[in-house]
Image (cartoon, rainbow, N blue to C red; front, top):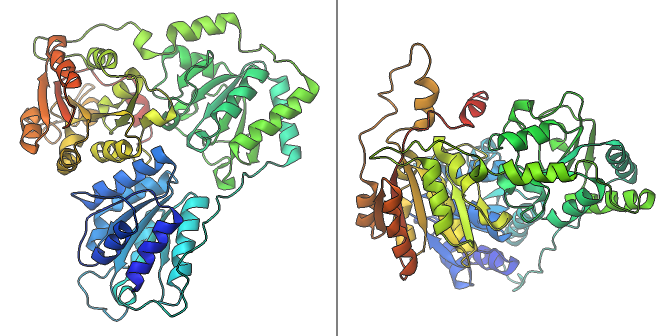
Length: 552
């Protein structure tokens, strides 16, 4: 056995869930070693797609995933996907070949460690045959317990070396890190703030997706309303006092209730400019509290009155116990009957009346989304690309829970949607994968449509097609002297025909009536993706777009 085989076997024994990649000469042997030892492998058409697939797979499965790339250019092709995963603290290993130590003139040579750091990932490497096992285990432990994206470089000369005699045949499992319990003084401080608040609101983010029941129990006892950041959408489904998404995607009623809070608690959520609308959702008189396992996240985006380093579930449990010791029964506070009625009537965009902007040749994107919401099965997994359209699938397509929504938007890159949907679908084959994307993002990542067809995924891809980069059109094309839009508008593209060329089903939608074809596809075998080329009417700039562009 050589070191490439050892590394593949070790990662398999440690329990990586799935590998994605584009295989070249440098990562050929280590990829086959992963496969030989039982790790499922999906061949992508571009390393960027592979990295995003792995990111989405980890988010939806809770398992460490692997991206495998060729040295140098293979790794650099994956840059945007790695950057997105790193910013999102996705537990993922980028297993990349590297040039041999002596190959200083290799065309493939780059400083891979510096490259990884520049993306926010953790650089690791297999240094030698003697250290290979320990290096691999260290990388996996960092990914799992540190919730980090790790770039593990495997030099070609080290790959080819034989495994040293006496190397163990099996590696012990890496135990997940225990919950970090908060300091008791801070628990009492949070309990005191909750006891004195009259209108508390909890906002849960990515770091709280595992802690929904504990946070909901504390909210019920302390009279707090519940909301999420976009990435945790669905976490509190079924809760009467669930406001939905906080931030740019909030309805006017949700925004009013959050801005009326006298205490806001961010759970695994940094309360950034998107989630808090650049701070406008925080009342000037409100106290702000944050709970996070990462101390560096506390106060990172805004001044806070109390920061607690601790696991969100453990913190919620401890604070609830502290409150119950003083006040055994739940208190009403913000959870009044009047508040419940406001939430029921106006916290979801599908309940907010709108004027239908459809024309004879174009469909209103809100009408499109609501019609598809009614047509598609409830057990779905919605993935969303970036662009002017993105609020419609994010707010108008219901999801069953937090594992029904995959939002790879930490890097704000257009074009990750299709790969996101593929990775998410492989993590949750029990749910219908649904993609919301714009024409720009879909065409940017369209090479992975072949991957979806090859995998026979029952994917519904909704392309909100305005023949433009709509965000730029609506941002720069307004005002007294609108700019020339020639750089961001395009001739209409027959995306349905292109999809059929890949082997997918493709339909063009200009009206409600055209959606009958979706029902036909749903009634069939669903053995190939369905691409819906929806020619959408202009919305004049999505409701959240003005807020979003304040950050640029």
